[in-house]
Length: 170
Image 1: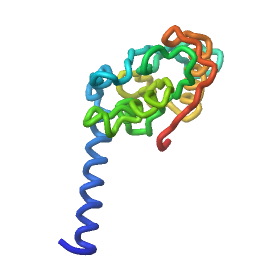
Image 2: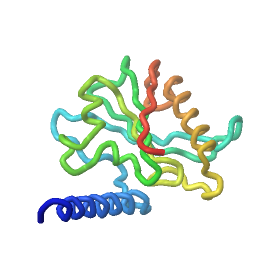
Image 3: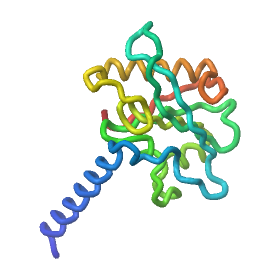
Image 4: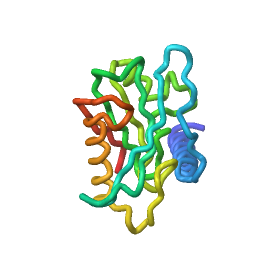
């Protein structure tokens, strides 16, 4: 193939791969319960279950699943909260295929940061409230609670003074 036909074929292949990844990330049980095992020298990750509410001053009746990772102890480090796009899960940030090449978590932790990759409400290992209750506003409230818990040492038993939100897409 030459010229335009080759570009169209490459574009179609990319669309198919993105569609497959999107389907895999929203299917319950399709996301592994924890990131792929790291080869020697990679970050150490622990699964976290973070209580959240859907409204300010409401009880925390749901939870966000997250994976807190760091090379060594996370104490004294800044933490990046990794928020996947609307149709992705936490594995977007720590892709299990060739993690040395495709893992943002590995790159960030190698640079001295800690990361907390989360599954959004209604996705993966996080709570699945009624769909009508999950809005941009309720997700903002839940993320605010995650930040407060990170700063108060109620996630991973480490108090993080610097919390950075890193988002993909939505």
